[in-house]
Amino acid sequence: MLTNALTIDVEDYYNVFARDRLGIDGPPTKAVVRNTQQVLAILKAHGTRATFFFLAEVAERFPSLVEEVVAAGHEIGLHGYRHDQIFKLSREEFTDQVARGRDLLADVSGCPVEGFRAPAFSIRPDTAWALDILAEMGFRYDSSVFPIPGGRYGWDGFRLDIHRMDLPCGLEIVEAPASAVSILGKRLPACGGGYLRHFPYWYTRWAMNRITKSRPAIVYVHPYELDLADPPSEFAAALASSDSPTRRFHRDQLRNRGTVRNKLVRLLSDFDFAPLGKIVSGVVSGNLKPPDNNADFTPGAGARL
Figure (cartoon, rainbow, N blue to C red):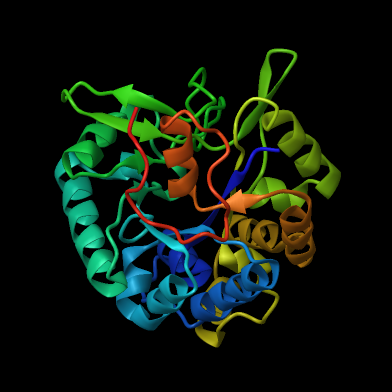
């Protein structure tokens, strides 16, 4: 059985939603700490290590959370600075945000930051230039492409497997695309986020079994998807005065959250997982079965293609 990658996108639902949907630009709330600690406890109980892609603004406000993740033996990656999708940024703005975020996260964690995941999987054909910038900054791998046709994100026809990309800048980077399955020539998303939340567990398990016949699967989860607590009072008040589409979008984000913990636990029981950096090292060295997940994780270990 192949070892798969488990990735956690660490962001605070309330400050990202408030900024994008309510026009309120505030800092991350303590909910991100509480929710991430829930994930850490589940992983500890199953002896599983993962990659935590941090928003730099979360690391900046709650550096002890980053230290807690590192102390538990997990890999640290960058998820951007403020969850700005790349198509909303100029090249200069993207470069600045990534550089500042990488340096901040490396300083707080004490670890090299070698992996990147764009907010909302926003590397697509019109933002592929971002890969050149990541390679020039020394990132070893990226996991920002969703190889499906889509509106908000997606790169139709993109390769499904982890592979090296030779870039226009003359450098290379390893791309680890989000998992998708092909059915009768149509690609369907699977293995994380809203797909884990909305679809029944049998679909995720079926997709995982199908994917792992040829390549490691990459599962992604947001800590806030386990959050069943009431929202902060300031957020609730602003939401109550917002328009109907905004409130409806929020309700959609809450739907089926109560199923996520059990689905994650079942995944950890049914499949083997490791940090994405370790999976990338195993793939590029020609070994699709990386070392034991309980072995020490060493960022940068493993050959490049």
